[in-house]
Length: 108
Image (tube, rainbow, N blue to C red; front, side, top):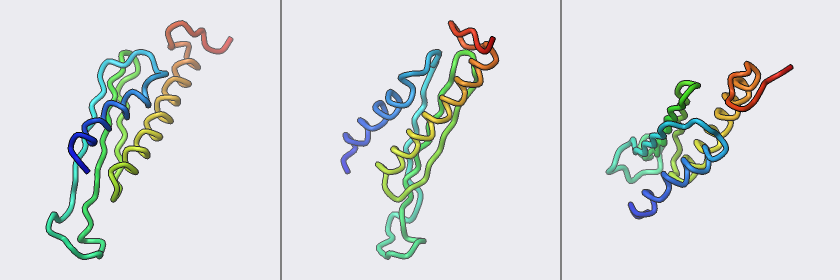
């Protein structure tokens, strides 16, 4: 996998997950690898684990953080994107319920 394709993953991950959520101040995406770089075996202790961490700073609703570990980077990105979407929907539903969402009155 080239570093160019990895660099293109980060913005698409962030945009896809936060496109329906207003009030995003900053999105921090961190891609890292943990494991033995010289491991050639198929045993579990020789596998290199891909880690994707996403931190979303919102204007009114605090910080939303998601982390995922997988053997495949693309699988980790997909999983973290799904988790982030679910968490942001949960934050939005809570804010609407408390009548704290801009432009939404909440329950009557």
